Length: 579
Image (tube, rainbow, N blue to C red; front, side, top):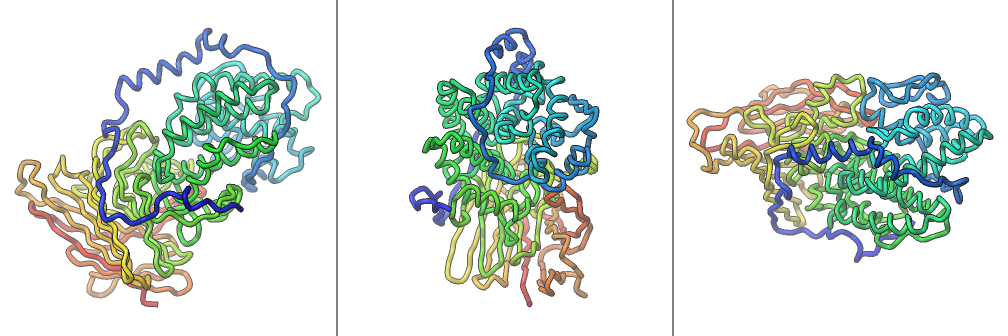
């Protein structure tokens, strides 16, 4: 592993205070933007776009790249059994309809990106795997090889598909059928031409990075591709400038997207290596920038925390990606632009969402999670968010999956039974939190965060302020949630209800104390924490947690409720580790 030079590390100093603003507004995607995007995608189906994709196709690839990652063995074994499987959804390989009627978005993405090639190669040698891969490839080519349409030719999926094809070419190009081989290479060349014209239309973040990676991959692997490679490198550098913030976080604020972008760039580096070429320094540097923020949102079990629709991706997966990145660095404690704050002392760890939500145009499936936090003790998660709005198992009802985006599905305060930021039906975020005031301090005895957001100001004239302090010995976490009247709306005379939720991990056993103001929390290994609150009524209610495979697990939540008078109110709470 290489060590990232100190000068290239994102700044991790502790600033006294800062105002974070939701740049780009909070109105979501405008009608004009929707129409323009719709028109652009419709042009894919026109004869003119088809003419632009015409040209010679290669007789062979220059070489084959290595895939730096292993696939999912369970999904690979399902392929050997004759099924494509993902999060409870599956289709038979025999007679596969590549139009995928009724498939979920995540399942369709899995098919069209050809990510399943990685799973297949993980569990079977080429003689066994190639016939399976060829069967699926033939079905896909028959439906999508010539017809450019959504979602199969979405730029990010096309880019991932080209990366997968060159990394697993022995599985899809071993046939002696020259017509079939020609069709595969023809589709690869058409995909490259399509991306040259559409990559910059992909959403900023992991999707645009994947699209430009496809252009570069084709330039490296198709004979005579140097001009395309140079064009793709320039596009990638632009995409990284728009997608990766100064602190290394991606603009969508999705840890799952951060991981996706990192994996794409590491896979692209393997394509350069296959050609015995060095990746351009600006692109190589982006790999180093992406790693510290990703580690910053990992818990003591090394797995990701659940933010912006993602789930708790397992620590083993994160470890493998970091190892493949060849970057050795420390977790970023304070990613102000990306928005996550990390407090860690003596094995106790908190991850706080302390920034405005991503702009509506930036993210699909965004969540109203401002000022929520997750907490773990060593390898044991204690306080979590429900998570998984974009990664939930296909068996989860759509209405419930949408509910995972709400403020109530996160460990924070809700006012008036409403979301701090509006959730649009199309998956984007609307009006709500526009500014977050943040201050952080570190001393020998305590790490402290104080943050506030304006998500309830328009409706209720109230600012939500949250203070969290973690003691140096890791045994005490003290917090306070306050509702502060701003005077910016017509004065209310009636009280408003509030609820503060602390969703608990499924492994936590909870029982109330006799006075009704506290609870005992037992973790694996007979670790005992106490919770106590003041200023609200405590109850223990049912909750839900989505695991790394998208499966829902029943769990419980600590629910603190009350009413706030027009002038505001405060609730204090305390977690204490007793053994």
